[in-house]
Length: 336
Image (cartoon, rainbow, N blue to C red):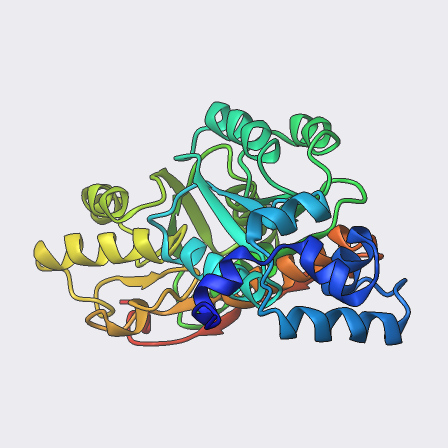
């Protein structure tokens, strides 16, 4: 009788068939095929040879049941429309995929309440949670992470929880120094979300800079985090009499740039504009945007590295802090 086609044979092969052919138990097959180091190398090789001879491939569901894992981690971000968070996700998901893990992404839409709900809901369905720039107040974040473990934080810290972050305060100070060197003494800051720790770090940098430079005034204009918010702030910026505007991020800077130029303001002759993040579009504005480049993709891959170590029961890597690099382009020039 002819043998059935390869695909049909493989579909009927089970882990029990592999165990019988190799002369071992079901648990030994599972441990051997999943690379468990407790299995004797010679025995593991015998199991793999049996699996290959039978064209056996474990289903993802079966593998998850054996391992007691979903092979999935959750990542919660405050705004999926922001290219910086997209870059973080890109670095994280590619690194996770290399380790045969999937990434479940949830968008909290800048809502603290939604973030709180998503954190608990996604953790029940995954092996771990990565919180990207969470908006939760520090005391609540400290309480929450205890029930989410394993958990990794991006752009926040909490006790001994592994974290990776960008040094927003130092980078913003570099942007202020750049404007000061160009002669700007009246500057406006278009502030981000009030509850954002990244916004608080920027305000701290501004306060420290003004304290050290008595000749410089930096006023705050409540704004937001997207293109529309920056465009809406255009009139207030022009009415302020400032010679330079420091935006919370590149999206805000790009919105402002579009709005003021539509009103006849020349950038940088009449007004210098500085962004933050160096999203892919920043170098293609007219003129190209001066900003601080955040290595977002690296933050994502480093966050996964620490999550993987937690999942494997290893000691996670040390907290990582990266310094965004000042990138001078065409939107900044000497004060008018």
